Image 1: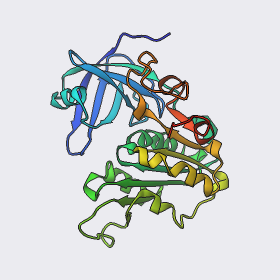
Image 2: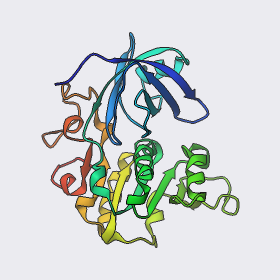
Image 3: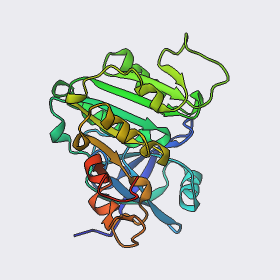
Length: 274
């Protein structure tokens, strides 16, 4: 049964240095959101919107989300400051099946703000590092300045925790010598060319703008990853988050209730899903 009463939360920290701000919310009661799941975030007197968790950790009173200002409610949130109160309902959705990933290599492909939910998944994989094989992250952004969590990801790569490559759509200069992780000017799909990995033992997860879904999942399949081991999260389609508004219904399926995480095997049966 869905609890429609929001959990009171206080904005504990806002990282405004990031192009899409990173918000830390301190909840009055614990909330356990798995990677890929989402909550409905309410701004009092303005409205609510669905947003995925961008973190995975032991503190169940902390919810972290990377949020783009894209409308009335998110604009109101951007005007708020530390100590202001909001409400969170959830978690909702299915999330990634972490238990099925044991012993597998992992390939994460993110575009733009799509790195946010995949960051939560990455943290969950790193928490199980001894049970996961190699982790590869391919991340495409518009330009070097818009790469989210860049320092954090590069630190993980420097520590040998993952193999990391960035691509950018535009760059006024080519900083290859100073920034070894930026490998391409072009789409993130360019990073798949000549990528060394073992597709027969790899699980893939994809999140990003619509253009990413139109090509990357099938391209991963063409490289040899089984469709049932290619996951994509369709959170961008959601609105009310609880199956009331029908905004997210695709091929007769409520993305918010039965997703937002689907395998390519499932997506192939959902017309116009990607």
